[in-house]
Length: 107
Image 1 (spheres, helix red, strand yellow):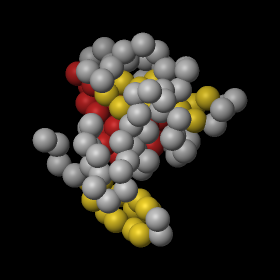
Image 2 (spheres, one colour):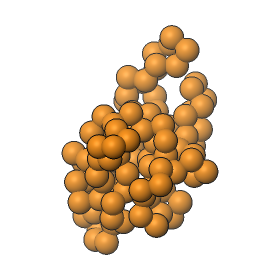
Image 3 (cartoon, helix red, strand yellow):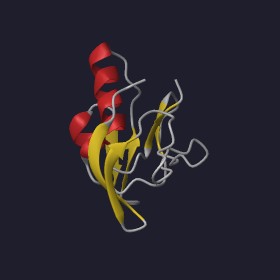
Image 4 (cartoon, one colour):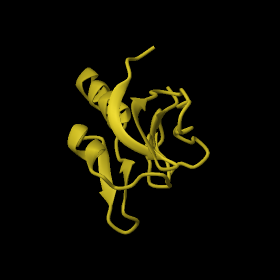
């Protein structure tokens, strides 16, 4: 299991700082990436962004080789699946840091 990270999420007016990672459902807010709600621009592969993306820029800053902004729809998407260990780590960090857990990994 991966460690938990802090994030200022709000759920029904409550603030909590413990965010669940990779296919775990947060017991407080129920956040989890939805593989049935992937944005259409994602390239095929393990990593994806779902429609809950808030266009915060965290993934694009963390893994700029793999995430791009859709200016038309105001969200990010996976433009390239990781091909190197460095890119894989960057995508994993983007997944862990996403404030709304819109990034998933089916791999």
